[in-house]
Image (cartoon, rainbow, N blue to C red; front, top):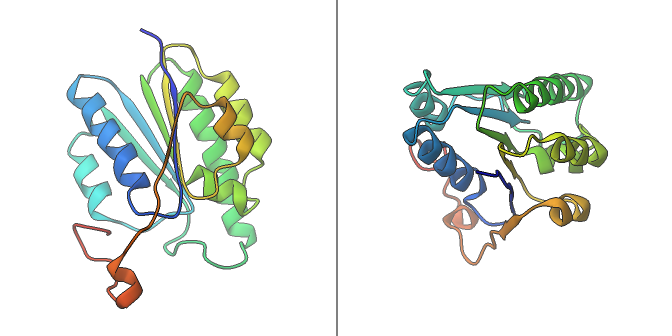
Length: 171
């Protein structure tokens, strides 16, 4: 069975949720899954939940404890580059049927990764591996290479009225 390249992008909520839903479904089918999260280093409920599937899922975070919402620092660049190497190794290893690069599009937009790096990863993908990239601001070259692109669009969000991330929902 061939694998495909998925991209979940846009300004709406649900990109990581969609990707992790796919990862959960894949693990339920007995697939081994690698999830690499860029620009995230905070323990969240999703990480705790995925840990319950440690026999099938490997989850690695390549960010600091706060999301990069400012000018990236040298540490951010170092972590992203480490993540790129580790994700490429997972992708081509033959050990995983699905590889998720969560917030990879954001990492590229912040210049922590080059768009060429993401395109190279897509091009290096073994035929049977499902590759999922998430994050706002997906570059047109990434979109063109993808087989499935979903754009989440914010219509309304309670965050706009001051509701912060809630454990079990956004955190």
